[in-house]
Image (cartoon, rainbow, N blue to C red; front, side, top):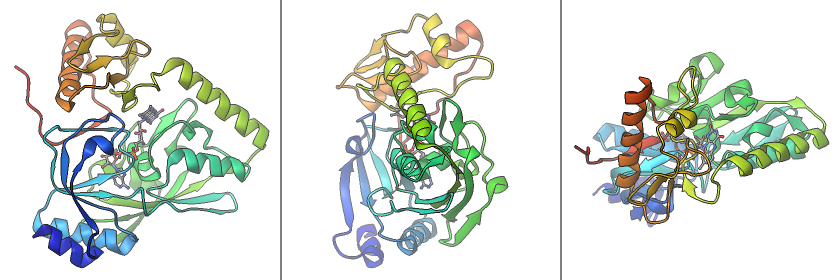
Length: 304
Ligand SMILES: Cc1cc2nc3c(=O)[nH]c(=O)nc-3n(C[C@H](O)[C@H](O)[C@H](O)COP(=O)(O)OP(=O)(O)OC[C@H]3O[C@@H](n4cnc5c(N)ncnc54)[C@H](O)[C@@H]3O)c2cc1C
């Protein structure tokens, strides 16, 4: 029924059923999405969103799935994935316009190729342009907020809306898009002319630091928790003796306590349980509530 209606918008064969979210997320866990669609243009995105919101059908917007924990029970409704078809990157002088599905490392390397500085920090962040806007992704000396000038988005009625920097409410790992129900379609970034050798050297240095400090060989969603004010999540977690602690197939990384990793056989529930356990112990010992940076989708069992 939903499939038929979506096919009227997107065309026959364009609605994937029961897609395992473990194949779409960097944690490599998560049950099946009831419907998954990959619209080919902005109008189709808008129509899908308007359709879902008019019928009260749950809608999940998927970037590259690098900041997501999806329930083993899967997701009812519709997952809209932007990475396959909406990934164009255009350069105009010192500006880059990237569609939401463009991989952020690619946007960063396009900046380098065009001798533009300001996106070196993004070279090792594995998300999409849209996900980076929504999360105000950042690392080392930068964050998206510093370079983002305009966003084209679509609201729940399917109308296109342009956002300037103020309306986006960009703050540490946060933006208006996390609560306003809009889907980001494209971002306009303003960079500055730079020396390609210096840009490349900075990117290499950031990548070296990442490889040295982070468990890039394991499945994860990056830092599991946001940095609490005045503390580092990893240090708080380590002080509670969690380094290397596992629960089912999930573990606190040996290499970096701020990362929860999938040892290869974790369920989403294992990861969820470990998040709660870490949160509980850190709060007990330090009176600091760690807030997940990772977005949690679907239903989980609350452990007693
Ligand atoms: C190894 C590793 C290292 C990482 N390092 C960093 C780091 O240094 N800094 C950092 O900030 N993050 C880091 N991350 C986390 C992650 O890459 C970022 O949060 C990234 O911005 C998420 O983008 P995504 O496309 O994967 O989003 P997803 O995980 O697909 O989605 C994240 C959230 O954004 C929403 N969303 C995605 N696209 C859109 C859109 N177009 N419109 C509306 N909503 C959308 C989703 O609905 C969801 O709520 C790391 C992750 C990994 C696995």
